[in-house]
Picture (cartoon, rainbow, N blue to C red):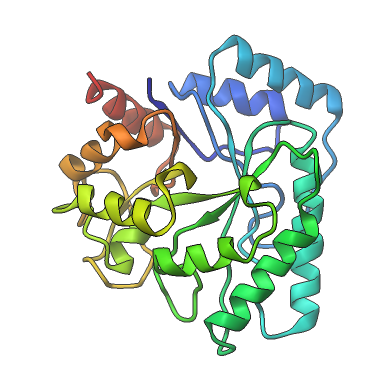
Length: 276
């Protein structure tokens, strides 16, 4: 069974997100825990959250992949930015615990000249600070394209952060197809080899979700430019191989392609048609 969906807006509430995704043919989705390019967030009634939880069960949805804001940088060179980001992090994880058992995905951050080791220490410090016994949300470190001083451009960099985390069972990885391609991993010609390398470095059990995107740029470009499925440098055939791969079954696949609802509905249908 394929769990496929896209980002939906939380503006009309939680239950509305589930119904919107179902109308597009999806059975998982992503949403931003707060304004993706700012700090704003609003409280959601627990009754609305509970209504979504019931809707997800009744309609056989997979796990959801919430996304922390882009402005969160746990490894900034400025302490006030790190402190600001850690507060976001703690608040958003607490909010996710109102809808138990899902994922909170985040970009590891940009070290801005501090270097990887300092950044990895800072990111792990923030993770260790927010994770507590009894929580049901799993944090996902996203694989990155390697633009600028982004952390997480290699599997080794992701592993280095996880190795510093105390509660490793509460941390996994979101594998972004556009990002890994632009970081230099050839998922077009050697998907098996890339997944074997991931397993060797991190462990395939840690690959818990997939951001499913084509790329506007060639391999190793380090630019992070998503494209619609089949219109980019990865291509439809290679991406269908990703969703069909036996090592990736059961994971939520989240479209982050430059689309409107009509486009997402078409891409979801495309994926489903090619799973048979």
